[in-house]
Length: 80
Image (cartoon, rainbow, N blue to C red; front, side, top):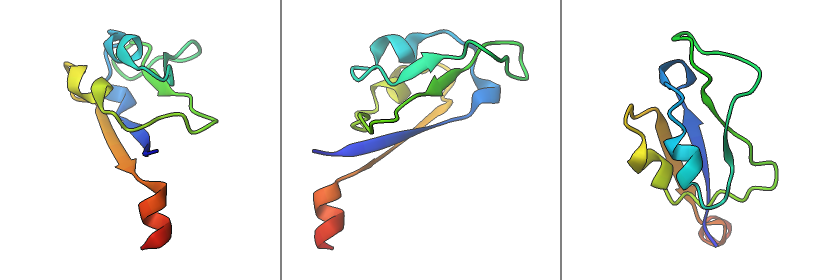
């Protein structure tokens, strides 16, 4: 199964929660303990078990284009 990760430009996030609502793996959550430079609570990637599949639904839905998704296939990486 493919795996992925999300890089977040937290200072540009306006905290709309669209990405966290659409994430099928529930690895994106809104920050509860800090604000970004714009005064919003940004989204954070919380994925200790590596559940992110790199589906990129979050990045497609983000109105401010603050998410970059990287996807890789562990099987392909091991054989290459």
